[in-house]
Image (cartoon, rainbow, N blue to C red):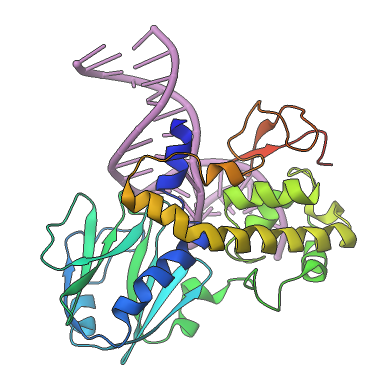
Length: 280
DNA sequence: CGAACGACCTGCAGGC
DNA sequence: TGCCTGCAGGTCGTTC
């Protein structure tokens, strides 16, 4: 039960990032940034001391997402933000007192404020001239919901790879945005064992896998709002999101398809859940 | 080149 | 109650 709460509370996989972006977009767009408050600059990459000066007074033109990065386009330059493993963003009244781990504020001319909270500080909040030239974004694979991603692409890219297929699809240079939960889920739905070498999955099965990745991410994005509402409302309603998961965090529970107990194995240093009967 | 692994952090659950 | 250990949604840099 507590596991369900845990999952709800922090889940910056791609659907969460997309939901976050949609949630903050209308409050930021076409607003001027009156002030930047950095209470804690130590992140995965530290906040540059000159970031406030570059950002204060700028207008927010648009928000975009690339992989799990939230990109905020200003009238001069961009902000490149990542939620890491524990980050979240919310819109608050700029007079609201900051809570623990509320590290950065973008105070807007509207009186609202974008507040970035990140307990583990694995995220980042960077300024750059042009994200297309930023090294962090340079080697990212295609978007899983875009045109350039399909089974044939995965099949081609997997030629000669001995790496486990789960690690392969979680590699951001293969395809972006497939996190640990959805990697397990998509592999289950595609009937592929997570430890199978990437180079030993057929073209046909990669087509299935690509479709399942798209399906599971799209469904989660549609539900993202619900997850966030539960999160911010703190109404203690557990498990709504977790019920959608067939295998993740379900060690020993019956497979929804064949009822054999779900197994857990560490692959590429990450916990992986699968059905030994349905996945080959 | 690919692949494995350590590292970065805090919070929480569970065991003793 | 409190201390210790292990584990957690990400992913980059180093090393082999």
